Length: 119
Image (cartoon, rainbow, N blue to C red):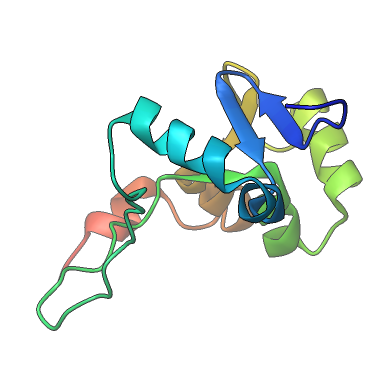
């Protein structure tokens, strides 16, 4: 590439503006040859079909989702999670709110035995 750098590198991935490739067809052909493909393949998610099962209900919420559920700001939710007012778990850098514990916090009168009693 000449002096102008049309690429952005994030981790192991380098992205180049599509217009640059249009302006440099020789480099595009060389890149395709190097990649070993005639045309780049783009995998697309298929549309849901009849009979597909809906995704399972997630057991956790993000702090932002918990904030929306509680009707408070994102910052307030993070502060409440830090203080322990909102039950949360940390997995790596992510902070997640267990849905069952949030439900218990919002409905303290409903004990675990109430949920399983069937008369």
